[in-house]
Image 1 (cartoon, rainbow, N blue to C red):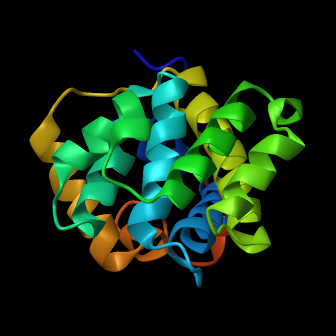
Image 2 (cartoon, rainbow, N blue to C red):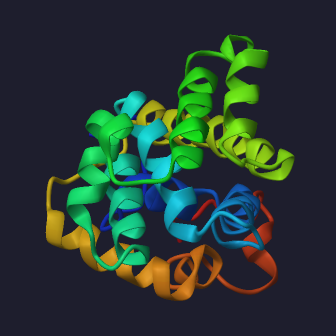
Length: 199
């Protein structure tokens, strides 16, 4: 049961975003930039970072939906996503991504847990400063997204088919475009005083 009166028929972060379109817009744009924008890390690799951090935060909705988006970007390899969540050091991913996931795990605990040794190891495996930057920001952002989803007590059904379908849609269309179906449009959509998402 959500802690506040969220729109019915939507789950997880989608219900919170529909409730507050004014903040949903920049949150979706941040996800789009981080996970789908120009990068030497593939969308699938970036989604794996988001999924892994969400699993560390025990956010069922985020780890499941982003795991589905990751799989959709990785030739539907759902087993790889599961391996990354449970033991990424033995998953079939690059050493560079393993080093970035290790940094992301430190960020999830707290930014000060990241050490010069962690950064050096990532660089040793070929990570650029931009890739390190983005791994840290993805991890930090998903701590926020996870707490947003769970802090409002959003509904998080255990329907793998639903997440799989939604994951394919987001992988295909992107975060901003995929949100258009449930966010209000028009001049009032960005004004919190006139539209709280429940109309």
